[in-house]
Length: 403
Image (cartoon, rainbow, N blue to C red):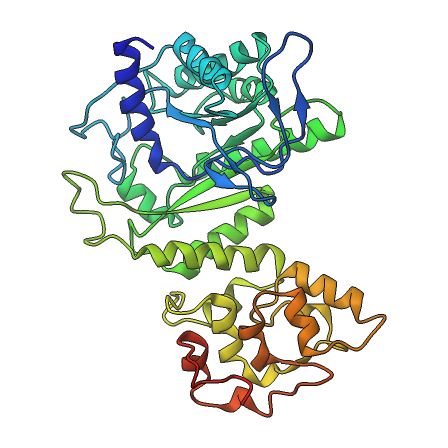
């Protein structure tokens, strides 16, 4: 790699680190044909761990960090005093292929600042994916869509990308108007809706269009939005646009920050709690209101996970008998995941489950003990104890939950 390209890569890889929405879960497997390059597996491509424990990677870059927009929370805004760089389409294609051949990556995540116009930018992104496919690359490609771009260009991009994503940016419309005046929440919502329609149509017609669906990113802590507001926005997007994922990115302080931004960055634990709450929305049957009631003032409890927070606020609904309790209540027992609950239901058809059986089925037994009944265990009103929270948050040898 020549020195000039290396300098561009350093700038544009660093500029891309603020975009969190780059997982590939849901991509259908695709192998390169004869003479082709790369492959895609359903396990996923990102700097993350797959369900089978593998760590996978991708080339995550911006096409350019020049941008016509001046979003107050963005390090790449037009008024930002940062080093700028721009790749050509051919350079991104070459980098992707060369990195793949060296076994550095398994795919590409490509986003960009707005160059010249939204249409011009979207065309450049689409050309990268198209040229990669033309050269036989069958690895994973995730493109960031530009909401203001022509629907035809987004349609073309979806023919070559595995996943498309449109950033919501902020959960509150008024905050978006103030902090990102060139962006419009209605335009973003319309683009998400059109993307959903295209994905559904492609599946029905058995043709290819963004087979891994669409995702989005929400910045947390740049404005005064509460966790309840953030989750309400997520629930709406999951319901209306069938998104695969909503990613939460804690706002990071940027140089020469606008006075419009929050004075302090949010605690990173807030981002973690939002991901846990998001999981409860998607797989555990919780509503936003139920999750929010576990905290105070619309904010999640940072000290404990949202499922435990809800259980402690609703102690009258526990304990649940693992041998007779309905699935929807077992899913609400702290420490029991969806897989563990399914195993419990399958196993109890043949035998009465004891505490040791639950220990084999779930690694979260310690948190579950106060909230469940087994053939050989009853919590004996442990849920009424004033110190239950302390016992669960700060366990010690002297504090036995079995006492």
